[in-house]
Length: 104
Image (cartoon, rainbow, N blue to C red):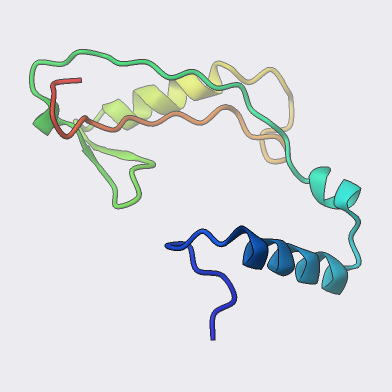
């Protein structure tokens, strides 16, 4: 049986799962917390004439149409990066998701 059910959102089973993983890996909470690096976040709405022109992949992390949109998003994300090692520290992430009800 599954220990965690995302549909239910049972915090106690989530806690047990995390505890088991930390124990198996031999990690402390400090070790686990050290894996996470918060990234700055900004959200905005952009009005468009026709939201149906914007298409994304299945998990809405990449724009598939119009053709040059994802390239522009990638370029904008790379412009936020100030480090020298792109493989170890990724730049910001960007994505678009058209509204289901209005042209934004």
